[in-house]
Image 1: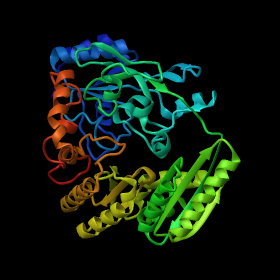
Image 2: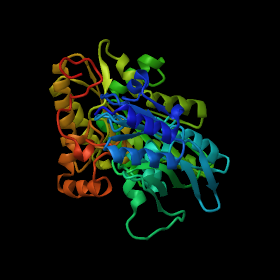
Image 3: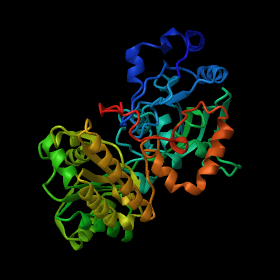
Length: 479
């Protein structure tokens, strides 16, 4: 919807002229996240206090203007794209660490606080916030809560929701709500703070968060294991978990991922059809050496091609950087093709990882598309980025068909369409299929929190329409 100058003037009065923009370049920039979608907002506001967010929502309610909350725009599903225009409420100026209480095991932060900045501060006390998303250097804590984000270390330490003790959010009508506690245990009724985790801005705008702290391990090491068959790599991961050994992280890369990274970064990884990077951590060298030996022994029983343990931080960092570079490297693999996020974040039971990878690769072949399968395989969270000619409508049709079949395979294996990136737009159709029996309850909760439907409307459970509508790419008929 288009909004008139009167509304803009009221927003300027609420947040200050320096925190409100209708400049075309700003509107265009804030119409993106890292997904395949784009739509301009009518105005971008950057509040600096919870009270300002409250005033923004009161104005939005008064005029029934849609509001899309936004962190750093690192999301891959379109959750931060203002598909109905209106107001983008960007939180980057609310970026402070408010209070660290190590004696009580919590920290208070504003929603715009950057993940890596928080951990730099916590490291001074010997603590950390573990979820470790791939966008750690840029993503904001409020966005992590809104998506229930996680990353490499979720298998051992959990996702964002597991660390949220409480938070402050602003309702659609502008009411400021503080929910949860600053206590490690809380059994008091409905857990609204946990409900807001994963809500993707559809229930309220998160402005402050209280996170539980955990101690940072003193020692760590990693082992890089290569395979001739990606199914063997998957079986190795299942065998490590079943030992039982819960690694700090365990990353899987298939041949497409390895080839792309080696092409761009100059061969930091061994040429192989698959590899896993297993990190173990603990308090003593003896524990680390014991766990590394277990990983090596299991890998050799699972047809490993090479097994390379390392305590060298530079070597380990090069492996981790290579794994994190998959997404940015894939577009360089095939000239004329772009890496797109369609089916990119499935979760399956860990024991099903080998079959899931095999099925994903078969689906890619059957649909004539290139898919890279990689991810946090020790918790069953697999990514399957796709390479498409983005100006070719037939490529998109085949790609979307393959994505839908990958989602169906994941659900068939007892899994889910999203393990950490959220739903937004790109996963909405398949999310609704997966959670069909829950849809009425989910929509009832949405209506209770946001009866005028102005908070990030049209996302997740509310999505309807064409997955190719609003693409950021110049595909004929679908711009």
